[in-house]
Length: 194
Image (cartoon, rainbow, N blue to C red; front, side):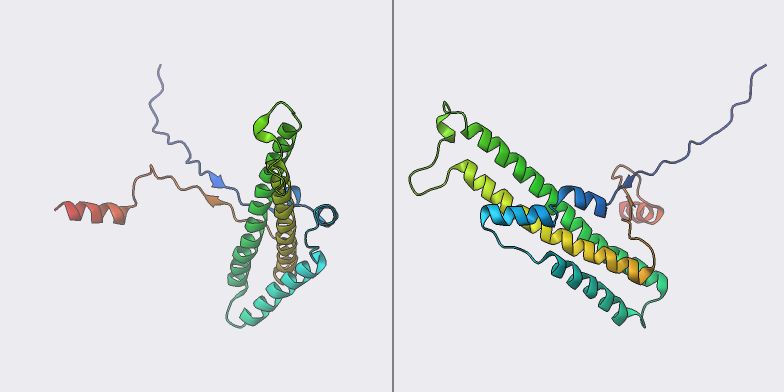
């Protein structure tokens, strides 16, 4: 005896685009100790880590206070989630860029150590080698990534104070350009065909 065919539809799987987390920022951006080492080694600016963090924390809290009469609790949470997400996303992007700059600097330095490679030798007198320029660029990117990390940490701390729960990124559905247009769009397209 055979089973009758059933018309089962498989559940629709929605892929999510994962947002950057503060933990990802902490993994990619230098902390205060590393930023201080970079500043001392390369003669770059010493950033006021605590000052940046505190200022951004106050900024978000004061923003929430000024909006509290006009926004409901849920609207405030959504608004702050987006703002904090922008800070965290920016810091994460800077951290990734810093990581790539460090890799390029290491590669260039390793190549320069090989005496048989003419293209990696020091530049003319008075000019730095390509490897030195890459190391200095990576140092600049490290200080910038650290500053953005501190801004993101301040924003995340403020979110927790205002909303009363830990901030986490909004994971949005991935756009699928191959999907059929929605009903209204399809009707409009058909109407245009005549």
